Length: 340
Image (cartoon, rainbow, N blue to C red; front, side, top):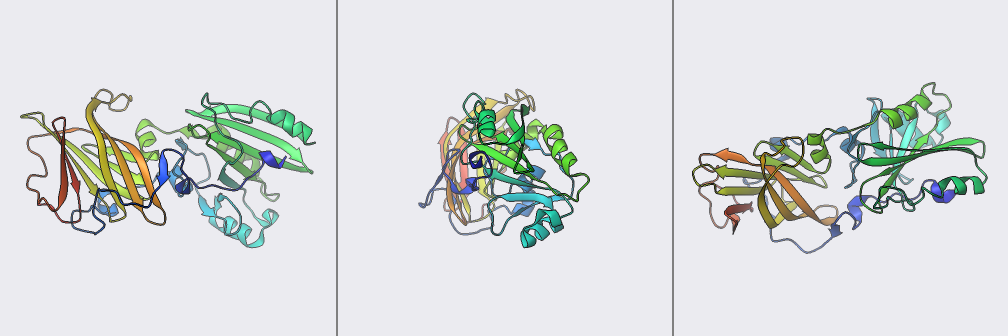
């Protein structure tokens, strides 16, 4: 049975999945020195979605609005694997005592599964054998149900083992091989304990399209996109000059921890229902974050194109920026000095 229960947590901030690789060499984007050209987190106004607040150390996050009580927060356990969701006082009490029966509120534990993954067709690696494995292990009252939160497949399982109920849900991240495992920690003194789990499974909903972009680290606004990689931010702006159709793209780091190298760029139209067929710029980029871990992330950045009479950035000191021309598009990659 242990093969289908909780397994050690792997935070995606430290693994090579999702086209995100550990790297130690600096990119040739922004300079490592802070400057006036940088855009502060406060200035650009990034605000995490609730699912991002509940999964602060994950690079892959399901695009859902989780149906949980308002007082549920996320805390990592100091000794056990997993991020735990619940009221702050309940989590602290549980971490201190280790006894869930002393707590007044139910909790959830969230991990990346190390032995159950999502297949390319959207099914799970354990899906065809789970019931038989449970029965062979001697557990009873096995109930398995599959459904979806938007595009994310969910496989929930309930069983009784050693006289105790076990509640699990595997959530596909729509990357082959990756799945979350979420476990419900029962609290015997809580009248609402099962309702929290039931509501979470049945009432969590997919995000709206704007927030779907944001949960994947891109907050699209008029004329610019905020790109969030492991908590470090870029502001990527795109303007189209009406008199000649020329496009100017500027890439500005929020601080010295992040830099960006533009690989390819093209003018396109939006395919999503949100801003459907409006002009956009698509940028294939390599983003490097140097913080607690050195991460290089391959990104496809989408920016809503803004028409202007004249570009916002007119006079630039060559030592301040890296300028690249591609297909009638000027790419300004700001470095450590201030622009005029």
